[in-house]
Amino acid sequence: MATNAKPRWLADLARLTPIRAQFVLAGNIRDSVLTPVGDTTTLAPLLRALWVELAAAGYRLLLVWDPVDGVRPYPNDPAVVELATRLFDLKLVDGAMATSLENLVVLMRKVAAQREARCALVVDFASRIPRSPDRLDAAEHRFFVAAERLSLTANPIVEKGADIGAANGKARFNPIVWLVNRAQDLPGWLTLDSTRVSVLGIGLPSYEVRAEAARLLAPLFPAHDVTDASANAKFVQTFAQLTEGLPLVALADIAQLADRQGIALADVDDAVRSFKVGASENPWKQDYLRARIGDALPFIENRVRGQRAAVVKTVDILMRSVMGLTGAQARASGNRPRGVLFFAGPTGVGKTELAKTLTELVFGDERAYIRFDMSEFAEEHSGARLLGAPPGYIGYDAGGELTNAVRDKPFSVVLFDEIEKAHPRILDKFLQILEDGRLTDGRGETAYFSEAILVFTSNLGIYVEDEHGARVQNAAPGDPPEVVEQRVRGAIADYFKYRLSRPEILNRIGDNIVVFGFITPEVAHQIFDGMLRNIAVRVRAEHKLALRFADGVLDELRERCCADLSNGGRGIGNALESAFVNPLSRALFVLPLAGRDEVTVTRIVEDAQRIVTVTLA
Image 1 (cartoon, rainbow, N blue to C red):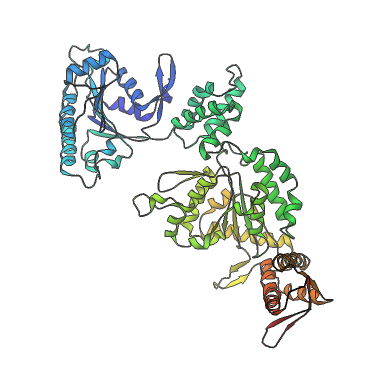
Image 2 (tube, helix red, strand yellow; image 1 turned 45 degrees about the vertical axis):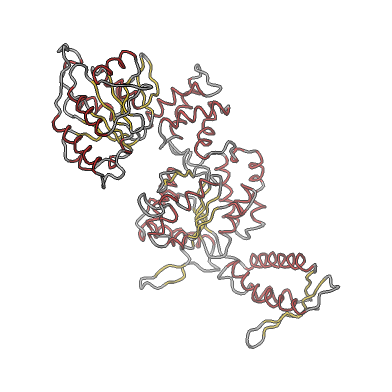
């Protein structure tokens, strides 16, 4: 194994055994380690890697203790077992001997002083020894005090009869090695008050280490051809990029998954996706989806009126997502969300409707999208509800609403409505989602956003604050579309760069900002006609009646509902409800409907008290 491939913690441990009596290995302790075996390298458990390193330094055996089985010799070689049994008077049953904490202290002292054979003691699952490191019971306290005292009184030893020029001829400690999930799982004073105790963190593997592991795992993938250097090099690069943030054991699991499901070497991205999100089929690669998106423009424009520029850009981004080219300009982009859209513009112009339409287009059901109203997360503490409370806080084990939802529906459109209303601290979390495509909640579980489309909506830029702090209109109906887009984009940039001082969020969104224009009178009439058709369909479904209008009544109603376009299509709907739906319901309620198959609206009148009356015939 190349020198630069050896984990730093392992190199540090071997380097420090002459001056450190105890080591605390904390972090990614259950992962595999690239370990030399003869002339090759393999993925081995941490204990095996530790033994190979110590054996090279002249150590002849390990004793491994855990709270369940007690103590056992390692490796499980007859000569090593015989030596350990003789030196430490072990009474092994099925290869192990149960040992209490009190007897473990005695064993630690024997190991530290052993001169006949250089050895080490590994205390596994040490995180599970104290019920609480801050509130030790009497037995736990005595045990850790004894361990601290031993770290200060132990001496480095030279093995009896050792050759001064050999590996075992130099003075080294017989170390105690603690394996913990977190350094704080042990009493703080044990590591802080003794200079003989060294804490070594074990992190997640680097890109280079994952690439080396990918080379070792490649033969497990179907259709692997050792002679195809180009395909193997591409596989190694892709596998290493897509598994950023994963331990090496996960890479081995992905390879096993690929072998069982018949996922070929060239489709390693499918194997990684299947491991992360738990789905064997990839909707983004289905032929029917490409056919749908090919006909997307008329489908979307039938529901989102008068926003052709926004719709075209949205479809472009969607096509990019389906083709797997999101972030293709970056070296490592495979973990980013499939698509990111930032819908900006006036209220009621179709931003949320377009998100629903996208969901129906991709997943066949507009209700399948995940929506979060960000006005509910205006306070900093509300982030615990969205993302999960930190460990130790009440409710942390429940996870977050966002992370839970994405784990349940990894292939989805996730809508963050009115994003500017969220607390800035919560917005910081989106940096990780947009860049790495993942988020870890309070339980330590990771949600992957790599198969989701993220949609942010915002009204930023329509109104701004003047020099006196007053809210003034920045863009108005009648402004040319290019002016509206320029002002909205400028206001969004000012908001993130200067008001929030978080330009990095805007940088992650990039050029995925889609600006919607104001509703024009022509488009308003189209929206009105569509809403009126919906009303007629509902009347027929509920009462088996066809809805008709007398001459001039429909035109009058249309003009009334489309007079004020400041609130967009939503405002037209509200006006239609007040000016027609409510009085129509009142008129139908008192009208004898027996024997009728249609009703005609002959007049719509508003009196001095602004009460609207619909006359039916």
